[in-house]
Length: 107
Image 1 (cartoon, rainbow, N blue to C red):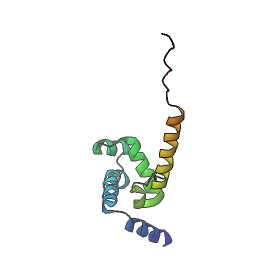
Image 2: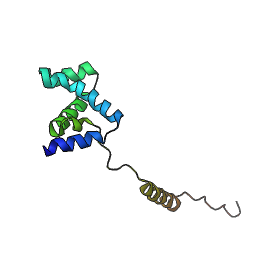
Image 3: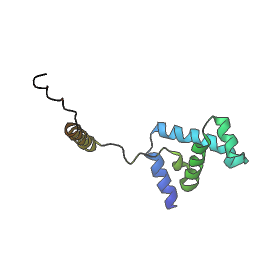
Image 4: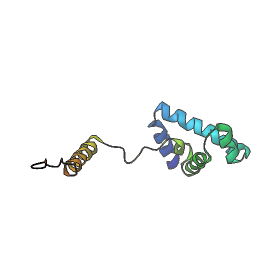
């Protein structure tokens, strides 16, 4: 019961685009799950790399339909992390910039 509530909340938090993508992924998996079609054949028929379909199936088995929603990246940059990254990048470029050689005296 608790898991069903969690799944319902997770789906409610998804955008329509994310739900559509999960439905498309499930449509690729459905022949394998319901009819016993080989996973490689289901992937080939859908024009999707086998490794992607294997990952989708593993996530579907672990979390149900919600597992097919594309996971948010944990390293997605926030505004503050972008500022920190920019400062570090600028500091590195300043410290490692190529300085012109002084002109030769009397040349």
